[in-house]
Image: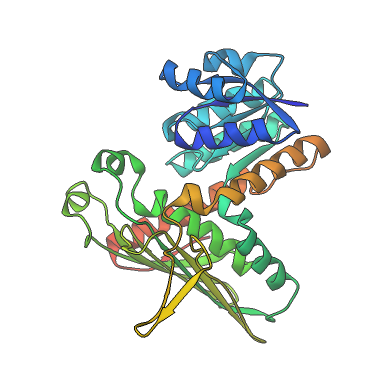
Length: 329
């Protein structure tokens, strides 16, 4: 059994803790959180014990740590964990500053320990199957990727103020997905953003509605649209057009039941938010991390994937502010 320590017992930490406890392949041993009651709650639910984060990192009885703490703690915890010989899974991003991420990854490399970044959407069963068919050549050479991602409602402004902005916080998932689907690295980013949902978000210096165009060196294009508001639920779709055809992944409804009468056909709304929409993805993501530990193979998405997505988010932020495309080396 792989012995796991959980750092951070908030909403996403609880999901990962439950998945470890239910995996049958690992045991959740210790849980830490800045709020002791939160750590004790998750530990009690998952058959673990509450402990201090530093004690979990240094414990010889822990094989791997899951980092689900606030973003500004991630890099330090990664460095301490790999130095202590632990395999690490960290929720995105490693840090809001790309230079800090690069410095952290250098220490991970020197420690020769594995680091996996939590871009969970790659593990969604529908998205993963679509990507498998793309790589198998079903649609020929990829030409155009279209990604739509809309939250059901905006987060509190207190969250916006420390999030790093929409491109680094929300769209970073879609930027990683664009890399995943294109199969090539974007070299040009052109972004626009507006504040149409909540004026308080604009007052905090961010946008709540945005679109990005990415272009690769060979000319492949990805277009991404984000909104902090979708009145119909959590909107998560993409379409990939290729030389031989098109493949797309649609939203997941609460049920597949349809009702019809003289007024027409009606179906259930889509799943309300990310915890429900990506429940299967979080389980598959953990399985991949445990597989990597057991096999000694490098997990994916890697720290390098995290850095590349962050660099795209930085470029999008710069482009939206300047109004000009940004080239990446």
